[in-house]
Image (tube, rainbow, N blue to C red):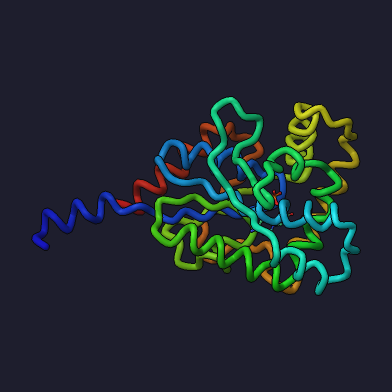
Length: 238
Ligand code: C5P
């Protein structure tokens, strides 16, 4: 390969972008818009854990029956597809071929997700799937452990965060828009509890990777955050 060819090959390389952070920091909105602008695939890993949780909730398996949960999830299929332009969700999620894109956003599922996502075989299964989807680059993944566990070799790692009050208000507005009757105070305490569980679990806790860039989004609009990340991505490709 001569020098010119090798340069254009580098410029056209498709990056692996990892976005981690606590609940309600705006990860999925930012990740989806970023992927759209870059022409990349958006992989919402939280949606995969939510789909696994919906399965468990529907089957009424107690949340401390880890073996039964692992067994149930290992016999199911969880798939993601880009959302339709006129869809309410940012990504389409299929559980055993059924479209569960909206069902996985109910508070009952949200509240149980930390427990299901702490089950080691469930994580192994979904992490393998996520790595497989990301292997050729040109992807934006969002979650809790993308930069630390799923893709420690990601080209760009972002840790997106905001204060709990701002995050609770965003989640509240999102659920109201979906027609759910919810209280702001309940959402806030759920968010604080979920952060605590996600950050203190033994396996793949929510943690900022050493080489991640932290962005505090309290006073930033979504386009501002997306532009900031695109500039960082440009630098990685330069
Ligand atoms: O991102 P989202 O809020 O949809 O994630 C739902 C839950 O899934 C999180 O609270 C966390 O318990 C779990 N999760 C995880 N690892 C990821 C993504 C999500 O454990 N990579």
